Length: 137
Image 1: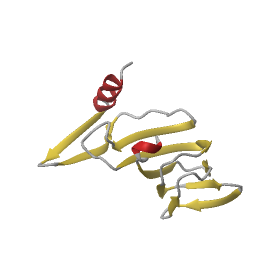
Image 2 (image 1 turned 60 degrees about the horizontal axis):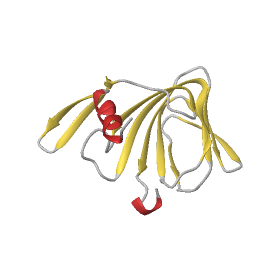
Image 3 (image 1 turned 180 degrees about the vertical axis):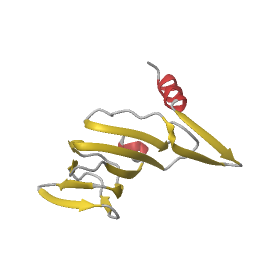
Image 4 (image 1 turned 135 degrees about the vertical axis):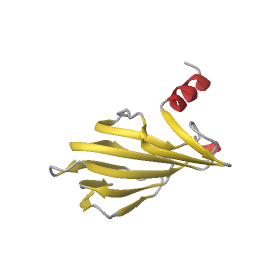
């Protein structure tokens, strides 16, 4: 599948509204997927170069079922999470910490990390990440 076709496929999953140069995207108007390396996660890209003309970051809304989450990984993008609802067990390097709603988390590039939803409530969070420098991709 060509890159152009992949981008068009992602654009087809998002219904957006334009106001001048800006875009409005509602979570309910984005079809979710469970990305590779994730389990029990409904991931909905809201803002991305693959969807619109944004150049420097991506914003994704995630709903994670109990014991779902992402396996340990690292990458060249720095990113953050904001927990809207629920709790997660966050693993950064060899350390673990339980964090919940109203918490913002910053993860530098190159740092191994993972998380798992804990508790009975769904974990709802926003993930924002920068795009890596083109020379480092």
